[in-house]
Length: 517
Image (cartoon, rainbow, N blue to C red; front, side):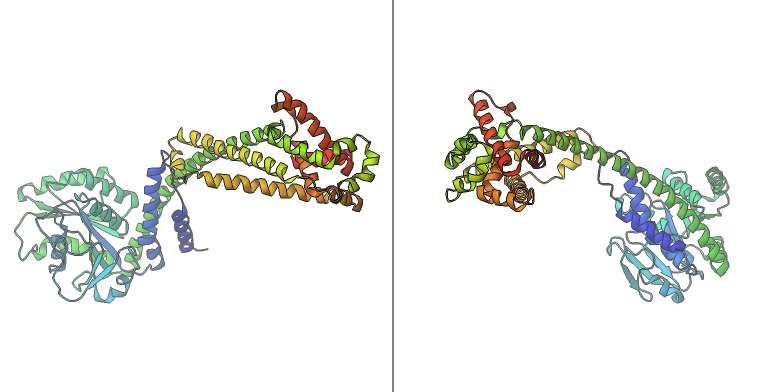
């Protein structure tokens, strides 16, 4: 895997990273994630894939610094609108030489911005015209080996313009930063120039509209500030305050800037070195951002694991309650006991079980054949009781988990994102699980032992009768019963136990009951 493949893998990993819990680190992590994805697509991947492409110069600066005037004067024609109305540059303009059109008309760089190609000497867009996108023009007066992009104001009153300006600077191979004698000490320019030092990007500073009497003093102070921020080697082009002619500065006003650009763009080796230097700095910044993303993801996953832990605690507690409530006799109350007595009476099991196991084994089939016991009502009653128990546990688990998630700001959104718990859905799910358990239990009854003799006894008694007997046995503890129910349940369980022992044998019944529970 080469370096380009690694960048594609990194971009895919960042695109798939989810920071959807409001942990403390999430806002910074999401900002760095979005910026890294954008920079990889806008600059790093296309630059590494096309090392010979012309350099992309971005002209940036503060509101009213004269960026468009600098660009127009550099080219010798008005291609970018300038105005006293702010903000002026709403849609960024990219100019390139005719021979470089194939590098910039496709979506090679800044693929998220739609292109609008302007042919010939069409007038520049006026402030407010057009939609957010990238206007692309051919201008052959541009120094060879580069394209120039006029960006919105870094401190624009419009937030979208500020965001777009930062995006364009991130996509640049080198910067031309335009400021003025009145604005050079503002905070925003120095924040951006500090980033230039961090990226090790080539940058030139145009100090515009400087009063002639203060030029030396202002430039000296600016250079002092640049040295303090690690960009002392960047050239400073001072442009004195003077009248414009046709919207342009005199041709000589930007000679130093033009010479600097030509020195970087005219030679393929120099272009490659500038691009490599910027690429290395940008990769370093992206990797620094990835570390922030990794920290945010670790915090996110930790919060999620805590939330899942609360859910697991609620589930474990629910299973413990179910283990108790399905074995303490609670499910044998009232109607279940009455219906089971009907089954016993219909089969005359009470008397026949008293005659002894050996004689019952011989006569059980004949006693029950042709006299089906009314077992369905018992099954229905047990089914309803178990489904109700499960339904209550579903609701309780959800309530306990939600309560713990609400207590933590990092996981409260998990509760907000849950669909409402519809009663009908919970009832249906509880009944579905009850039916599934009953089917499994009957399968166990049919297959227990495996011998033809045992199978014959099961069929003789009736699979459903044996299954209900097994349910009664596992639900039969009297711990949850009171008063007369205790004696009735005890006798009921004893009869069911005896019936199962007749059919399967003592040890098999114990194993079967444990599995069924």
